[in-house]
Image (cartoon, rainbow, N blue to C red; front, side, top):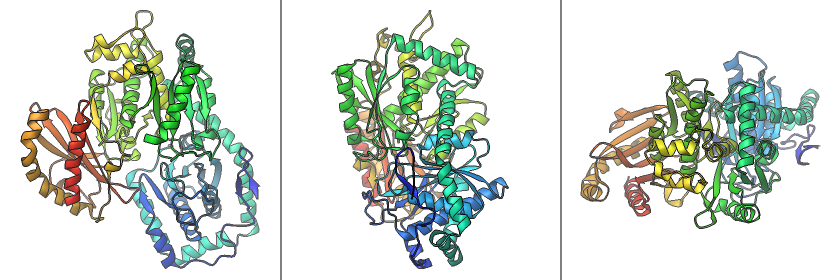
Length: 636
């Protein structure tokens, strides 16, 4: 058995493959296991724990699922060779800290090597780290990442991408999924994978051992590349000189306004990444909790109760050192982190909702763009600003963007869709410094193509640290001035003041129970057609109440697919299986949007997601709209 030198965890035994001594499962058995595999552009996910228990922390995976893993690797290797034209492409392979990760990685490594691919294996590696390393490698042709993101511990899955460090585009992903399904039904492909995982030859054993041996070196290189890339992203400067200027300024500001951060890493892949070193280098104070890999003490999704420990630890840290005002909790692959902050009003720590986190990050980065324009730091000051978001992202983003004369462009749910929308918008001549899915939390700061909690933290740090100086207004002062609320600004402002200045909207959290509905049909086209037949009459019955309470006098329907939005009712405004989002925007007399109803079948879970939002601090109003929407969908 070969061991990881960083953690002491087993990597695998090259001479004892995962399926040694086990018979090859039939195509029918593999097909049945495939039925539980959720395949989408957002990721491939299923329960891999051998027991079938989604909360099981066993490192063992079902043998039939290992066959599927091998087929996934085979499919991606063939796809990558076709995309790049290279017979032996280089693949960056990493994964989160789930216990089943090593056996899935070993399976993929054996298949990649058999197909003459080269492999840089990073073992436990945060998703942004893996993707940044792949992007900056210079030779890497694509990456495979093993993770089920925020799903429970017994789940696992895969994400795939090319040399640019972003996940595959929707059409590429669809093609890969189709190829994978065909391979799973091919007895010859199954036999090939079974042979590799049960009785490898001497050369295959030696090649696998060599990949394991090089893991330490590749991990070190990945951390260095991730640091280099993160400096570029956070500073928004291409040149090393510009980056150094930014971090020098940040260090000076931290001496004037110390800032402490609690990092409650929950045993995630970020425990083996750059977080502590990257934050302390410019002068942040950092306190790490659950900082060892697999030290998982609460549910993985960084929402609600999962943030309670961080909230308590932040209060404790603040009592000892008042500079501690922020805390973050990532999901297991570390591409998303939601925040807690110390509220100076009541003197307690509070959990920020995902939509609030994203709004603050957008405010920070749009404000930083204007600050750089005025400081002469911008590299594209002549281009107009824009933000790319998904359909259910809060309308407060439009309100924030208006203050900075920026446009908001929306796309379908899914990180790849928002990234591609931003690319389209940049090609049309805009600057898009920030993008993301406010409904899910986290943000993507250009030129990154994946969410990263470090970038979220630095967006907020810019808000707090770049204050008025030498006659130049700081970011928060610019925001108050441009939004017509100069009275909100004060010299000694805190993060509480910034949060209180955000436009007020009340939104459904994506992870509250009411946001998820079981569906009795996988025919999304039929469900949407039924919804469209019911909604007009339902509107007529409620329109007087909606007008009296919120001034809502009309509505329009928006259908989203990939990067395309179509306004209109009926199947003519949708294509294919019609699995995109459907959104009802609720309009005031001046055609301004006061709120929305939104619905979409999940691409990664067998559920239908619903959400509502209304302008103002109005929990009862949001509840009313959500119950209205849920009632309609349940009838459908």
